[in-house]
Image (cartoon, rainbow, N blue to C red):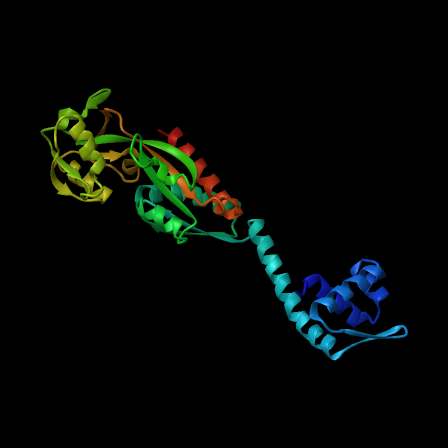
Length: 304
């Protein structure tokens, strides 16, 4: 196998005409140059230099290798510089997948800080809900995935193969119209007090947590409106068409007008995290992105 360091020595010998002059150019001794040239000739299996007294000239094979060496060394130098730029966060790319309320709250703060600190690092954002976002990560289609899971939910071990960076704890809150009988309630409201209400909820796949909490309180919610669009949920509640339960982060992602948030009992929380693969966690740009997401989560928690 031809090594780049041997090619650099061959070029120096070819340009200077001697081992001693090549050593001075490369900053090493004449015996070291001689040893590396022997190793290179052994690798290619043919002589590369003809020694006549104090002079040296290239063989045909040596001339061919010197011609190719320039391009090989230039390519390696470019690769080394690019890798050094990525390692030093002067360059780099991170593919981030987030669920919508994370995209509008945590992600902007984190990415603005990342760009200010490392302007050469580019982040590409796409949206997906877990578990789809987690599958994108495992399949190599993204580098970092924002995800969440509810406390006590089954399947926590599904992330055991991933690096899990906690960002913040989010709780479910009730949304009621401004004029609702519970709108001015101090403290928490038992979810059972909303049993007779008309409900606004997500699609059948997304409303599972709500249905589970309601059934635990002894009733099934009467869902009249189904939408996964948070501004639409707030608009419907504000118009007096029903009540809803949303994660607090989702409420913070929109401008709630005409609605009131009410703390719920029992308290239902979800853990919001950033996920990546163990090898990716060692990549400087990915590590920096995780750090900024954690700081954004801490700021979001402190502002509540």
